[in-house]
Image (cartoon, rainbow, N blue to C red; front, side, top):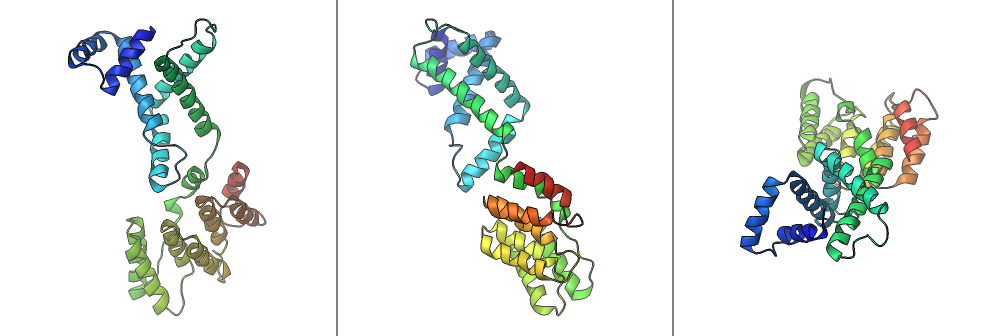
Length: 265
C-alpha cells in the first residue's frame, strides 16, 4: 500500500484530519476491503503497543498482560499476527533503496516488528505469573466433611473463598482454628492462599509450614502450594527447592505436575 495512504490512516486515527476529509476517507474505507484491513491493523497496533507498558509490574500492568495474552490468542489477534509477519517478510525482501523513509510508515514497520517480538516472547516463554495461573487449580482445593458448628465454619470459609470474599473467609477459618481442639490441617491450604492473594508472602508461607509440620498424609500438599506461591512472587529459586523436595518421593502430592513445572523453570 502506498506511503500516502499510511499518512492518511495516521491522520485519521490521530484526529488531525479535517471533518470533511475524514468523511471522505471513511467512504474510501467502506468501499475498499484492503484499506479497511490496514486501518484496523494500525488501530490495533496503536492500542496494544502504546496504552500500557508490557514491562509494568504493577497490578494494572499484570492485568494488562493477561488481557494482552488473551487478545493475542483470540481469532483477531491470530489474524493480526499473520498480517504482521507478512509485513515483516515484505520489508526484509525490499531493497535498501526502496525501503520507506517517512516516519509514519517507518513507525508502522517498527510497530510490526515490536508486536512480532512480543508474540515470540509470549509463545516461546513462560512467565512466572502465567505458570502460576496454569498450575493453580481451584478444583484441587480441599473439601471438608466434618459436622456441626465445625462444619459450619469450614463451609462458610471455603464458600467465601471461592466467592473471592477473602476477609470473611479468613475470619471463618481463624475462628475455626481458635475454637477447635483438633484442627483439620488442610485448613492451612486456604489460609495460606488467602494471604497469598493479599500479597503477604511471609504469612502465606507460615500457613503452609503449619500444614507441612502436621502429622497428616496431606502434608506434602504444603510443598506444592509453597512452590506455587513462591512462583507467584517471582521467587524462582525457592520454588525450585520446593518442587525438588516433592520429587524426592513419587507418592508426594502433585509429583507429576512438579516434575513438569520444574522443567519449565
